[in-house]
Amino acid sequence: MSQAPRSAVDKALDLVEAVARADRPARLADLARSVDLHRATAYRILLDLVRRGWVLRVGDTYLPGAAALQVSAAALHHSLTALARPVLEGLSGATGLMVNLQVLEGDRARVVDVVRPERLAMISHLRGEALPVHRFAGPLALVAALPADARAPYLRPAEEAGYPLDGADGLLADLARVERTGVALERGRNEKPVASISRVVRSRDGSPVCALTAVGLDTDFDGPALDGLTERLLAAAGSLEDVLAGRSGTAAPGPEGGAR
Image (cartoon, rainbow, N blue to C red; front, side, top):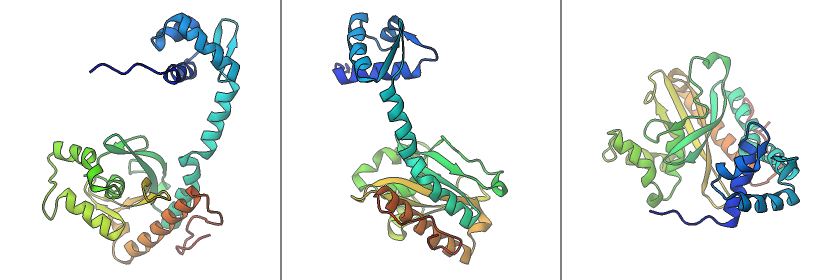
């Protein structure tokens, strides 16, 4: 299938990204070649990008401009990971567990930030990894929060791996259980001595934004400890929802499960 022709916005963004990716000040010919544009077309677009401050021209080379740097700094400060970091740190400190932040990407959930205490250094942090729904609590919580007709892409990796979808022990039953309880609990499915529990964080319209997942040794999830952990996880997810919605006066859960 042939690709749709690129719009003017596509071409401009391609050039901005090419300038940002370059490991040294880039020349016009290099930029045009890297984004598959004629030199004359690339030059005309770069003139506008320079005028608007997205690209800086230095002699016959190009660097990221002030506008691009301002957006990058603002995005870093206001990104999901930056906003969620205090909540992750608070939940990890309150529970002694590793806490990660996951978002849906492709047909999996990617770990975008992690707080891991020293006592759990033997457990892989999985930062940057894309995790399938049938093996981890985070993707399970996220997919369970989707409408049933939007889940198919996330079920496919489980089918390809031979994981059952139907039956009492199947993935569809797991998703129904998460919908009913509000949390996804996984004990030893990916790594025998490791357990995790996850809660989805929703936007104002109810759609899933990310998942907070607490990870530890399986013994950390025994008996009353699981009840206390669940309470703290729910409080932390609610705190992050407040932060994302712009509601002030919220904080990460303290050692007793309340706000601090």
